[in-house]
Each structure stands twice: as C-alpha cells, then as structure tokens.
Image 1 (cartoon, rainbow, N blue to C red):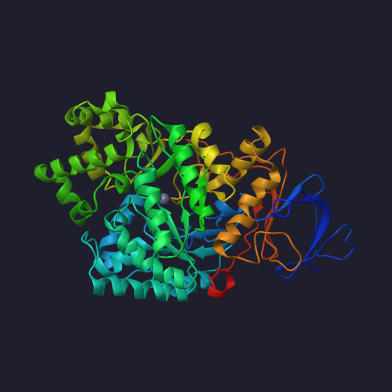
Image 2: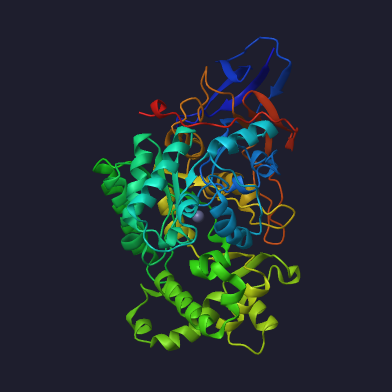
Length: 549
Ligand SMILES: [Zn+2]
C-alpha cells in the first residue's frame, strides 16, 4: 500500500547531487528509498525524467489573512509549497482582543483590503484551522503589532513597565502554544513606534523558548545598515535570540553595490562572531504592499476620515510622509541632490516616486488598476498638487490601495544577497480573494528555478533546492521535514526542470505555474498532474522548545 514514486532524480534537499531511485511512502512518512522497489502501492507515479524534491518551505507568507477561507491554499500548493510560515511582518490574525479588533485591525483591514476573523491566541487559531482542515502545513509567528495593540491600542508612546509585563505574558502564552517566534514590521504601525529596547525585552521571552526574532526591518533603503540591520543585530545580541531578516532588501537609488556589499559583510562578520542570523529574499525586483500602511503615520488611523479631511492636520500628515520618504529614498543621495532645499525636494519627490508605483488593486475604483500612481493622481484629481491628491486618494479608497513598486536591482543587489548560504527564497504572498495580486503569490518558487537555475545558471539545482527546503526547515527547527530521507515526513514535489515556470503577469497575477506534476503533503497526493485534488492533509506545526539545538 502507499505511494511509490518510480525512476525520478531525487534531489534530497541537503545540497548533494541527485540520485536516481524509487521512493516508497507509507502513511505520512517516507518508508524506503532505493532503486527498483517492487512493493505494491495503491498509487504509482512514474517520475522518469523528472526531479523529485522535498516540498518547498515558504518562510515568509501572509496566508493567515485568508487561510480559513482559502483553506486549500491552491496558490501555494500548486507551486510546490508544502509548508509555510505566516503571521509575519508584525501583522496577523492572532493574538487579538477587543482593542486589536477596534483599533488595530480596523486599519489593517483597510490597508490590506481584507477582513479575517481574529483569534484571542495562537491555540484558538490552531483549533479553528484544525477544525476546518487545511491542505498545507502551517507554522506561525507571534506578530508584535498585535501584541502591542492588545495592550496599548494605537498609542505610540513607549510602554511602561506594567504594560511591558503584559506583553511578555502574551508572548509567553503564545510561545507555549507553539509559535515559532516573534515577527515585527517596523515600517508599519505600531512597530514603527516601538523602541528597540521594548523589542529586546519581549524577544528575551522568545529566546527562552528558543524561538526566533523575524523582522521586516525599520529601513530597507539608504538606512538599511545603520537603522535596519544594526537594530536587528543588537536585538539578536542583547536578547540572545536567533534573528532572521524578512525579505532582505537593499534599496538604493545611488549606491547599490556599495550598500549591498556592506550589508553582506556585516551579516557575515556577526555570524562569524557566533550570532545566528539568517534571511529570506523575495525573488522579484519589485515589492507589493499597501500604500497607506507604508506611508501614513499610525495616529492618522485613529480617525481616518477626520484626520484626512482636516486642512491643518493634512499639513502635518504631508510633512511626516515626506520625512519618511526622505529617510527611505534620499538620505544616501549624492551631495548635488542633498543641497536642494527640502521644500523643493518635497515638490519633486512624489511626482518622481509615483511614476514607479503601479496600483494592482484598489478597494473601490477598479478601473484604474494597472496604472501608475502618477497617472491615477493626475487623472482623478487634476486640480490638485500631487501631495494633496495622494491624501484625497487615501480618503476615497479608505486606505485600500495595494501597490507594486519597482525598487530593487536584481544583478547588483538581489543576486549577491541571495548567494549567501543562509538566505532562502520566499513568496511574501498576500492574497486578496477574488482580486488580482502580485504574481509571487502563485509563482515565486517556480520562478527562481526557471530564472536563476535553468536560464541564468547562477545556482545549481541542488543548491537552490537546499535553499528552498532544508535551510528554511533548519531555521524553523523542523527536524522531520525539508529533506528526503527514510523516516522523514513525506512532503514531496515532482517537477519537470525543462518546463517549470510561473505564468502570472502584472494584469493577471493569479495564474498557477506550469511544470509541477505532483505535490505530496504528509503522504497524500495534493496536486495531481498540476491540479489540486482537494486533499486537506496539511498539519498545524507547533514549535517545541527542545526540538531545536
Ligand atoms: Zn514585510
């Protein structure tokens, strides 16, 4: 009985060369690997000419926002992902209380055009998922935004000692329930107003459970080192915690190579010193995010409509937006640019940047989707200066504007970062059910194999598969997944190296890839000949303290 995979080229995830052999799966495990297995099986897969790999592990995914509705997770499973980590970037559906519901998620929902059910804690969320059934293995972080909002709502002041204690309690409770660590989104509220010291304090609890600190850093642009990475390293050091850089990016208009090299040297040197720092990389040169979540200060959401309609308050909002853009994009500008007075830069920066921003999805006005922000603002608000037009646009869309922004350089930055042995690819998927999204939600993993292995030959297939499987498994501390070995869980992908590719486009990001024939999750065929079978055999993974060394 069981499943027998015949004649495939097995690339086991460890990075070593592939071998041709058969694999016998019984129950949820790989029971035998050897040539010419003669066992009777109820399902025989002929994998001749195909690659047999461990299922891909996506270490950065926003699936928690939609997984209860989209519990078959077709977008992810059909691209070969068998395990994913969610509740990242400091945002997630658990833990939540009335304060989170009332304040925090009010604007998360606005910003991300979603309205998921929220759960009091990780255990309740796990229960709901187990009851519903899911197709994919799910692991979760504790989102710091929720933790802080549970205690402080949208207050931006520093936490006092008793509030800090309450936060420690929440982190402890959820670590005990099996969370893998703490995630932060330090460009988004309320992470953006959280001090490093506060993050160190709650990360100490994560460290007690040998979880990891996973951060969308405070700055990924010109200040990526001084503001972003130095903070992450300080937290790793002072909280004595493993730290992971979410979607590692170095975004610079002027000094790509220099900044990228510095970033790499910094991580390598602290790793040598003994700090456990890892990273993942989103494999597209553009980002996908919520425009309002990135740009608007936290306090605006306290009274979204009121603040954005009040002329005096609008002045303050415009200034804060400019300061943020300046620190992200201009602080490394050449001297000739820096001597331009700020009031003049203010006139230039939004026209300049908005030409590189494409609106993929807007809450109300769908007709403008696919156009640049610049075109949209100048068409919809022809009478207004762009700064004002932008605020009106936020108001009219209630903040629900998802954008794609061209920002990274593949050759000068992404590939050098990705070449580091401790960097995994990730999808950073955000699904908006029934609407368009960035193609990465459907095709990030096939894309990297097609583009960086088959076409550009930058990585061997063995190394790429290691980065997609055993590396993220080790970051998560999953000792029974991410590798094809007798006795390990049977999470397996079978694909055609000549065929595999993504199919998503800017106009339609929601297209399944090609070249992935079978996906097996916990010993059950979940994708057959490229199509989801409806099988719900995913598990909710729980971090166990003693599992990690
Ligand atoms: Zn993020």
